[in-house]
Image 1 (tube, rainbow, N blue to C red):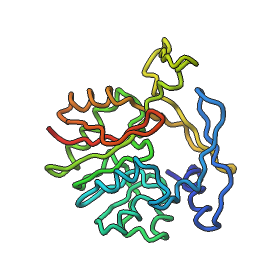
Image 2 (cartoon, rainbow, N blue to C red):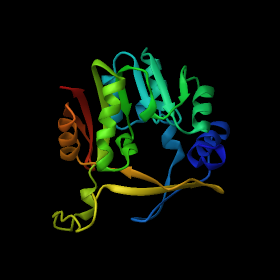
Image 3 (cartoon, rainbow, N blue to C red):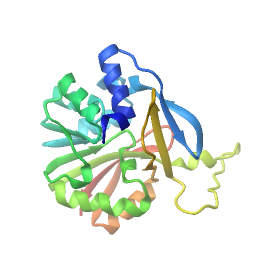
Length: 236
């Protein structure tokens, strides 16, 4: 990814350098324009939601923080004494992590990584990077390669079924092609507009079924207030 097409990375770099950033705009055909508060990417452990805190406490051994962004999770784990590698496909994010004190931050695509780890973290709806339900087997094929024996994936996601809940609390999913949690996003920061990319919000049952089909076991270890959850996934 070129820096000129890296809106997330530029927002992260600006916030680190100046202590503030302009609006990181989020576009999707399914929603009105939204924004991502860049300050949330710089949270301390104490400021993180329970799901993220739980995941960090469960991390053991050589740990991989995928899509690490500003490195907030990696830095928290370093303070806990863990051996952590942070990866991201955003050059400016990786540069910022290095400047913030992340000991090992790599410009690296998760799906082509070759090292092995005891714990893999996909946080802040990190499972969404798979893009579509159809591509979920690719996640487990990657785990086959990079998880050490007895290793674990800790990932969180959200079930978007709440978007279809009426005032009586009844959820009626729309009649549509494809899975209702498959979205397309595009980010813009200042005049830097990134390419559209798919993102997946997967319900726990679907993720568990896909895990089982690929030879993995899934356990829900924490739940949030908005149909969000943290899953622990291990090899059968």
